[in-house]
Structures are given as structure tokens and as C-alpha cells.
Image 1: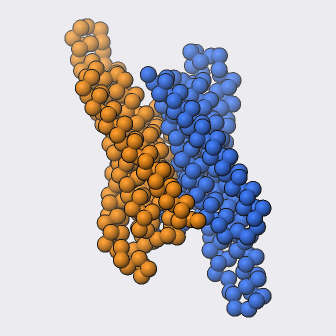
Image 2 (image 1 turned 60 degrees about the vertical axis):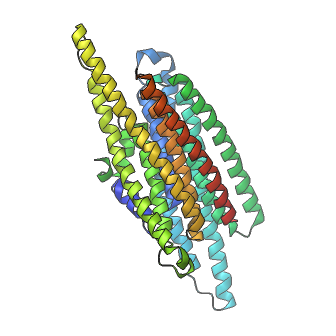
Length: 208
Length: 208
């Protein structure tokens, strides 16, 4: 489990010629850093008299950012696992027509599984971007730059995850599945980009 | 040392109410993930017959990406340390005029130090973005999405570091220092944004 191992070890493994962990795991890790910064802003606002009026919203924000962070940390590992399933499917025998058909079916199923993970990462990234907006609006103004960093990492994570969705969709033969997933990704990217622009602007506004 | 500890521990600490590690360390960590992905593309290209014509460039690329990655991993830690120096300066006594002057001087010096770290992170992020461009151009096409992820994390890292430069510049009283650093950051952001646009476009082009 990468999350329990040393950070330097994970980054070393990322740099190596082993195809996993790769960009998908990195995007989930970057977004998890973003989610953690939303939690930090919430934690620096909780219990402060100056922010007495927003304590309920801050508690909900913290609950949501910690949940999303945990989900992203799980997805770091999961991205690596689905890659293993896909690699195994590609290695199935394809001598006879029967073998070819069986392999094709296994590869298509594994590609759909492998699409689902970066898709889920992109969805969680959008969630982090939305939470960053709340953190920048109502959180401790002394930590507003951390809300800005959170939205930047979340938007980058969504863009990264989209690239990993695209790779898998390229080889999927069901056009309805491909269209549905790509339309979903385009929507997530468009929302994330708008949130990045808005929250970064708000952050600079509050920094002065 | 965060890099030697478990990754989950670093992210937990980021999420806590402790002001360090904060957004600066997170931006260096995200860019280090990007640098590692450039190394991965280089490692997946090295020694491959199909890429025989670019082996020298790939060796230089790997050397540069690994150097930049190490520098960014050091900056994760350093960002936390300068924060400590600044916090200590702010806590100096300020009862007498003499004490006030001494504290002011220490705070200004610490702010300049605290600016230098995110400034260096932004410079290294631009370096990673430039290396991503090379990786996308000449690296193993099967790993092109990782070059795309690298540029996205590098550009986000630069934007994050810029926010952390801005916070410190706000309180620095030397207008020449402030102008010089902010002009430098604007240049880094403009170059990084152009590289993000170019490399992401090239990545989608190669993914098909």
C-alpha cells in the first residue's frame, strides 16, 4: 500500500520504468494534497471566535474534505490495481478464434474498469474544487492561499485524470460507453476550470 | 524529514490545524510528482530500439528530471523550515523601541527567506514544464499521457508557489525587492501556462 510507505519511495517508484504507479496515481495523490489543504483551512477556522457565525458550515466542510481525501487516497492504490488486471488481460493467449474472443472480452471489461478509476478521480477532483470555493469564501482569511492551492491541485488532478480516461476510451469498442464517459469528463473539466479561475481570483483578492 | 516518512502521514499533517506543512510544501510535492513522471517517460524510452535516434537526449532529459526532482523534494522540507524562522521572528519582544526595531529587522529578513523558497519552487516547476515538453516530443509514445500529467502538475505547482510568494511580498517593505520578485513570478507563470497549453495539446494529439 503506497500510502503507508515512505513518500520518497512512492515518488521513486513513479520515476522508475515500471508503468505503475503512473499518471493516474499521481493525479489522485495531487488531488489528495488539495483535499488535505481544504481540511487545513477548515481546521484553522474551527472554534475561532472571529468565525463563530460559520462554525456549522465549517464542520460540514471538514467532514466532506476528509471523506474526499480518504477516497482519493484509496484511488491512488486502486489505479495501480486496475492496471495490473488490464496488463494480465493483454497477456491472455490468442492462438485460436475461441482464445481471441475470450481475450477480447477480458480486455474490453478490463478497459472499462481501468476507465472507471480515473473517471472517479476526476469526479473527486471536482468535489475538491467545489470545497475549495467554500474554504476560500468562509474559511480563516489567514489560510486563504491554502484554499487557492487546493483548487489549483484539484483542477490539475481533473485534467490529469481526463488524460488517463482518454487513453482507455481509445481502445473501447462500445461507442455509447465512450461518448457517455467523454461527455462526462468534458463537463467535469469545464466546471473545474471555472472554479479554478474563480477561486484563484478570490484568493488574490483576499491576499491583497 | 517528510520525504522519509509515510505519505499518508504527510497528507494527515497537511490536513491538520498546524500551519506547516502548508500550501508551499504541497506545491513542491506536486511538482516532484511531475518531475518523477518525466523520469518515468525517459526510463521507458531508454534502451528501446524504436527510439535509438534520441538516446543521448533521453539520457540528458533523465539526468535533468532526476536533479529537479531531488531539488523539489528538498524544497518540500525547506518550506516548512523557513516558516519556523518567520514564526519565531514574529514572536520576538516588542516592548521598547529598540526591541521593535530588532524584531522588525528579523521579520523582514525572515520574510525575504520565506519568499525565496516558494520562488525557487516556482522556478523548478517551470523547469519541470520545460522537461515535460521534451518528454512529450521525443519520449515513448505509449507514455505520452504521463508527459501531459507532468506539465499539468508543474504548471499547477508554479501557480501554487506564486500564491505563497505573494503572501510574503505583501509584508516586505523594500519596494525594489517586491517588484523584482513579482515580475519574475509573472514571467514564470506566463511561460508555464504556455507550456501547459502546448504540451497538453500535443499529448491529446498523440493519444488520438
